[in-house]
Length: 270
Image 1 (cartoon, rainbow, N blue to C red):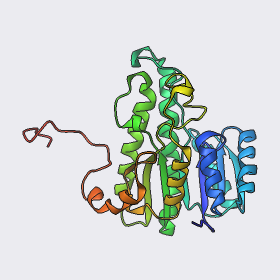
Image 2: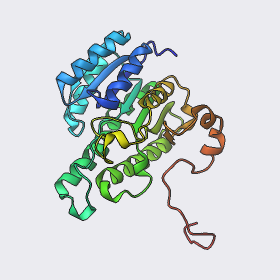
Image 3: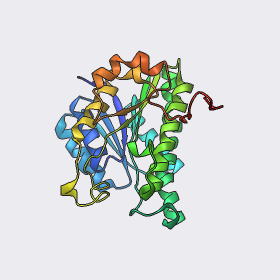
Image 4: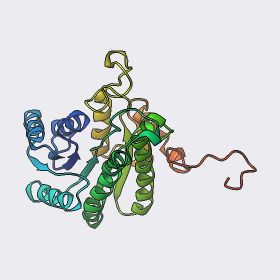
């Protein structure tokens, strides 16, 4: 596939998943804006993107929870590379260690939620108006299966990713008819600095192939997943071709969105 003339902004691009996504987009010919808090790690990613064939990159150190910094970063990317066609909202934190929700320091808990939710909302707020005005664009929220079920030992991460799921389908409903598409994609359990020690000894974990997530992002960037607008996709478990083929059934219901489960036909919320 080719992403020539595509401008992508990838957050959390200094390492791990964000770095690999940026390199994958660069390999397809995209011009890539790289956002993270560390300039050194971003410059390393920029070199890797250039080696992969990116025609241009923009290094923009910023904290995704800082509204002014996000606004300035997006402006820098558009000044240096052109209007943003693809936003990959990937930057995130996890709880520092497993603990019951009431045992987590509240300030630490909210820092995780703020990064994972406010960071995504600020980026959407900054980038979407331009996409809507141009009548085209794609936004990908990096989600998690942990947002689809309660995970008591990692409550801040689980709650924040559930909120991102609701943000995704809420924005999707508002975007209908604008030409702009949004989806949420989970990489599954991939080995990065953030996840390496979450579940025990790394050598004992059933790691998923990170390349599957990169492929899902590339295919979304190329427009191949637009039929899944507003839906949750699991890169490690889903057959993307089969999912797109089933998109009519998926999008005609509440499938792949965050919803309350009723207890049966007598449930007044049914």
